[in-house]
Image 1: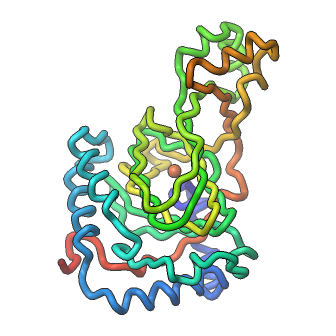
Image 2: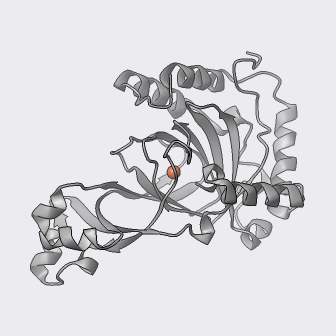
Image 3: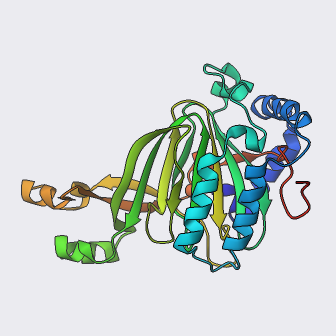
Length: 293
Ligand SMILES: [Fe+2]
């Protein structure tokens, strides 16, 4: 998302952070609370160290697509992880329902725990009603673990050939527009603690959108990280019902639904305003090769 985008977006985030110096309500609140937790942590929680080691073993280079064995191992570790393993707690002010300071500024905040060329570990903080708009992960595998809160998730995968079978006229329509057919993979509400979600480069819900129902914290393992230079830029989409770009006859409407599969059109859009995030320093337990364990 914006943290990993091109220079314009990146500088926007950094300028924002440097100007406010974490004094801005939503960030300063969290930073102070984060520090309180940090003081009581002297060593790296075992789960966090295992996560780092497993990531390092899994993502050997920026082109790695994890083997089933590595996916299983990472999911096992993430499934068992708790908010406290990264220095968070549901008792922090940010996660209190009805936090008026957060309501005034519903922007999403992120912190990068670790980043190298092969993978990154980030935490996203979504205030109540906060949104990470529909975006993709080109060539990337993403493990998402909801640590705290409750959120609605919607995700899609591209459909590359089925649309021709559904409606040959769509092929011409797609050539002349930015819309592309996608299959709805998930449209559900997750409540922590819950299992880890895995998105593969072309399957599993490679495009997804998060909407926080209560304040949330999501830990993402991303391999490789976004890199505009290496062709892994982030794109944003607006979803349209299948009937919006097809005949509206009942017969055509039925073509938008095959068995339990539901198809939508995704239209690539300009970077939406609500995709902008505030970056904060990671103040949880240390992570990396030098971390005390
Ligand atoms: Fe994402």
